[in-house]
Length: 287
Image 1: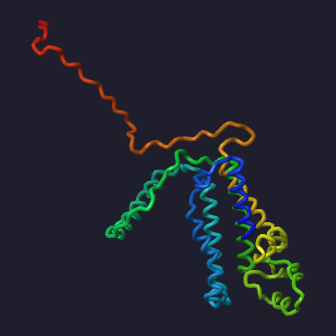
Image 2: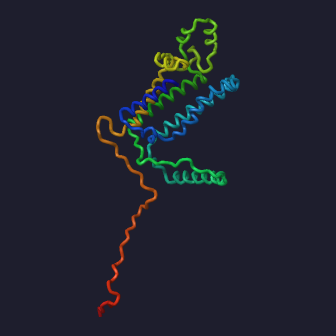
């Protein structure tokens, strides 16, 4: 979406200009970034399938399109919930043991598969020098995005994958045939608001001229949820640069990670007694 792209670029540039740092571009404060990969692929898949297999993606039941929406929105919700959770969960001992066994079983399953492959790592994992701090100004944009994604998902699934669109969109066309086609469902992912539309208040009814000038081929209408989510993306990226409490100059306490190579027990070596200067001296008889 163009508004999300503009919000992302603006947020990163604002953070770099105000704080003059580039380290937050590594997104050390965010967990589960890999969840964004299937979300992006699921969002781009309908455009690719529209050119290669339109009968498959736009079938009468729209089953494949709805599954892609579930993957896209589900990964986004899981990513946001994962980052809203506390850094350290106080799990019961049985749960920690079960998770440890599952990790051991998973590694044991993958080890024979890659045993005969001669793979050399292209890069080494770099651990951050501090535990990422998640304060309220880091969590607030995540909460904004979670609300926006939840409302967007509700609108899409309650309307069978269609995004509601106001009839103001028809004002851009003068050809009656095009208007009739749009009213009869020519738009594959959008539908004009009617009596059967669920949540018509969240229909795409806002037009942004400056976005049209930047992206003339993009869809010109947006709904309030999309603008709300774009604001959340902007705040999320700017907050990655903030390391002090807003309104003060007190920096956050950054806890350094212990070096895994150093032992927790420090061994102190006591030097032996200095050798005697003369080897002919006999020990004193104390009797």
